[in-house]
Image (cartoon, rainbow over all chains, first blue to last red; front, side):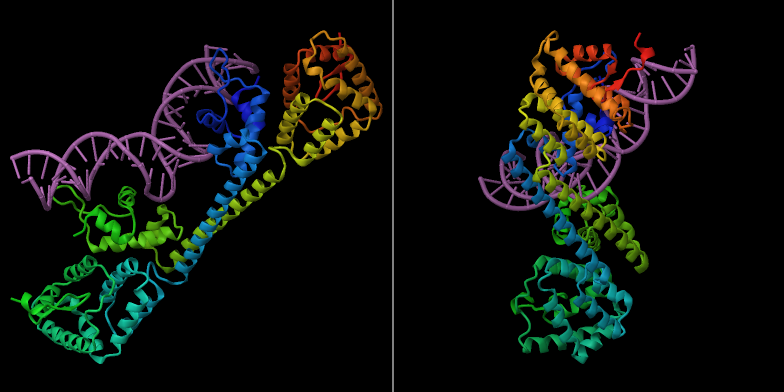
Length: 258
Length: 258
DNA sequence: CTTGACCTTGACGCTGGGTCAACCCTCCAT
DNA sequence: ATGGAGGGTTGACCCAGCGTCAAGGTCAAG
């Protein structure tokens, strides 16, 4: 008769594993001696080796029992299914690896390359790092929300930057995060924005559906408001002139202006 | 301000995951409103998206924090280490797959091909399935215990089977599991075995170290004794004649015979 | 008798959350 | 004002496959 550690040694497993197999009823509980120790015979060694053989081959313990009891056909079928699971897991890990590689290659933390390039262009225009940080956070959210649209949205932003007025706007906004609420330059910003908006409306570029959720746009606007003391006033000025919003600026219908 | 489910939706995760990240201090606990609900700002959305980006790329949650805080160098180093882990895991799974394939190909449950062939040869000699089963279980244990020796041990058994006496021995043993303890044929078996052993001793094939643990040999012998009523008597007869053991038969030194 | 090695049960840890359970909060319609 | 729907909250158990204590009983040897 064998003790549990002898059994475990002969089968090449740990004592803990044997007890685990008892708990999940993979190995029947053997008899005990008068002191409560489990006593095993050679049959248990054989069963245990068979269990380990299957488990080492990747069979989940939950399926070992059925495979041990199975005839050749069910056995082959079960093995195939398990192999399918293994392949799927390998593919999953390979996908994970390639995503990790792309992450390391430079797509800096949740941002696609196009956005990184756009932020670099802003940086090149002399926009302060603090403002870039705010922009970047907004783009992270947008990229997560509508990954399929991000490249086309960025392309539009690039076009806007071809306009000298937009460049001037950003050079003003660059330091605007620290402006007090009544800084006179806010009016200047509003003037530029209004000019840009009017031109955009004339070009028919406003009011087209952009595929972005309204409440999500509100969220982006609210963070802009919270990030700077002057932001609320800028929005108020624009609203007086018939424009509403920041992330997505729209004409306010006349009857809703009163 | 956002509720937890809005936050989760914007970041593309489940509410449960967000709470999990709070518990493991990956995401700071935000303030609560007067009814105890967590309230989030857009910063939380950005943090959460960054966490998911890393986690989706295979970074274990336990290491996400350090990578978020890391500079470019530590970041690259950490990513490389994680990639190493991923590769190791993929290799492990591939090894598992190939073991599974071999299992399916026919190495029937814990037995190498050489043993399967040997058992088939016994079967071909007309040995009963019941006896084969017992042999097979013994070989499973031996193969698990000394996998590096199994092929040479089996080769020896094949040589033995070239001897007509051995063939006769097995044809007798085939039905011996059911023999009563005092069956006269047991003496016949002992006679054949003694002849074989004497010949083996003359050929110098006995007493060479076989590399198998003594207590393991005892275990195999004891299962043989338990499997058949006549087994103990056979061993007793052989011991009277100066031989001891079954799995590994040895000359009993003369002075220990009294 | 003591020591050290081995045995017992029980419980927590890991990964990344899923899935209840039991209860609270807000809103809307009656 | 009340009741129900549909949110929210915390808490606790669940999955694999054991590893690793913890706290104590048993056994063989010196």
